[in-house]
Length: 248
View 1 (cartoon, one colour):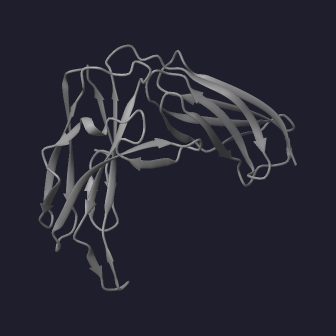
View 2 (cartoon, helix red, strand yellow):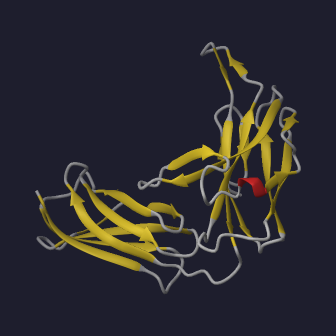
View 3 (cartoon, helix red, strand yellow):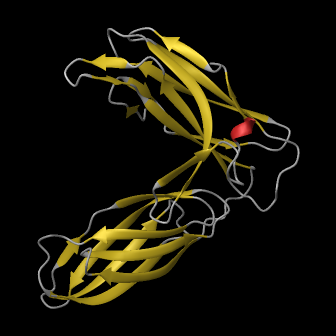
């Protein structure tokens, strides 16, 4: 079970909800929300918004209906607009998506954000402030059918100021793509090898992304060949790039 824990005591068991539903049909996905506090009740408001990724993979947030790929107005829950959890109580929230009869065929993936916001702020006596929690659960929709995974590596370069490899790639798929970037260095000066930090990526169709892969602090001077690979779970679409550079 994947958990996201909020600082003041609310936990949800799913950071993302995925739907593959045809027009005029309804899909249901559930997750659990937990009040981790042993002493305070939790009043939670349910709202919706839009979101996407920027070129660095950061989440960007918008009002519901603001983006062309929004599906916020398709969403409803069995929790209503607000619900209460007693100390230690949990509740399963069913999120229903009702897909309209006509859709723009140029939009492969639609998204929304389901927000759970604590409305009864709890006083922190140590910090002399009142604290509340807000958690967002991402919602994804696509029409069922073949998933054509296609990640294009556009460039790989050395960013000396950041002491990192700079990878630019694009998602040319018809679906969301999640994967991991693996990077290795080969020092042709002495024959040594070094593995760099693995980086998890999440993208939507049409995304253009820049990823900075930090070089190791203990990297020795020399001539290197960097090999960067992205694994999306699709064995037929393993994208690989190489770069030769001098590290001084």
